[in-house]
Image (cartoon, rainbow, N blue to C red; front, top):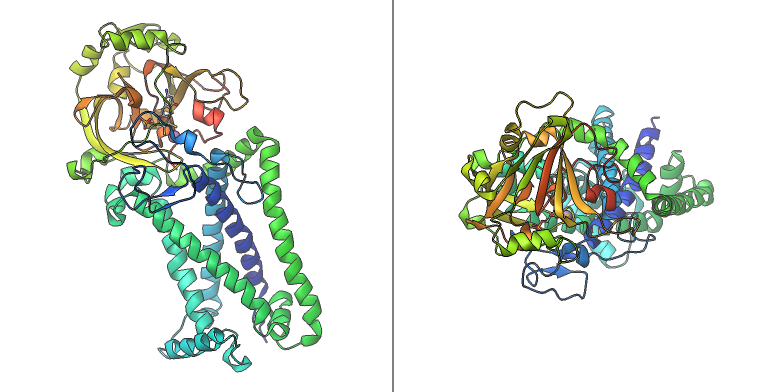
Length: 507
Ligand SMILES: Nc1nc2c(c(=O)[nH]1)N[C@H]1C(S)=C(S)[C@@H](COP(=O)(O)O)O[C@H]1N2
Ligand SMILES: [Mo]
């Protein structure tokens, strides 16, 4: 007789358990970086439907940064813990990729082996039968053994719901949070009614997953364990109670080992964060290349978002330069940018040109309503206007052969350095594919007004297909470069250096 719980089923189940652990724990790290949830299309403080922090936020813009709102979680609970949003996101990315692959394998095998008939109900009788089981459990009883073949009606309904409804919902709401995907398919986001709605739904589905996990594991130990456990754990035929002690030990030990492994991942990551970043970015890069890198923003072409969608509130990350940080930026500001110049060029081009704000405003204007998201989780919809980055670079003549990236430097300083050395100027390196997008602009206006100081006046970068950390505010200089290995800590930007984010800002 074919085993009821064949090896592939047990192996993919165990792997799924580990991956769900990675996803939940890294999900908590991500949530802790902005411990608030909204149903709105913006993230206005005070309008959250749920928060995990006692901090009261100022409702005024530009005095508080999202980085200040990040909470530290214990490495026992989150992956990796201690305010490491970048690494948490990478773990989440790796977890997702493996979890989707494992899930596909499971579903394909389910149908290939015919075992799907055990979890997908084929008769309406499943509902009354499930109700009967439910009433028995509600009376703290256990349905008798004949109900389980090997699953009872309630289990069938639950498993079908988790595998074919809850898991896909997790994936669909997760996708809506990627700036590359929503900028390429803006209508997709419209279905949910905004990033924050998708984010809240993602959280609710995660809660359902946790409830399912607890009940599932709990019931395995409570419902006919002497009959089922040997069957499930050891893959031997059902009803061999003499194997019960052995099976019980295997199950309990399995759970303990997985939990220890998950906590171990946190401490391993924290022990050497640059190493963890290198490993995780390398492991996830093929996925990003396959699914995200080819996407180009169509936000300006499709005009899915309109004036009605413009947000009331825009978070700030990074406060304007102070007198100590950039006296020259303050001096220019006080003169209304009259003598301020954008420096364009550098060594590779052989020449450097200086552009005034009026020069930039005289160039073709690119305007669109788009969404800005911080990797921490907040979003805001605004009308942005400025000049295409590629148009400005074209003023230097044809792209030099060795030019592979554009380095963008700021008047402002990084908020933190990862090793607490003195703060250095904020910078970001943009790859050609992002430089060449229609919606990659040096913005000088937002919502038909000159850019606010806290949002990057007089000029800030916007890359619609990326998260906010690529979008340098208070831009001072742009230049072609060949590589970014020698710039900063060599990861391609201030947030890549300080928060261990990926160079690729699309997920
Ligand atoms: N110069 C500078 N640019 C910056 C930052 C910064 O700290 N300094 N923070 C980045 C991050 S992490 C985000 S999310 C966005 C936030 O843009 P906003 O403050 O306009 O909302 O700016 C990006 N550009
Ligand atoms: Mo950010």
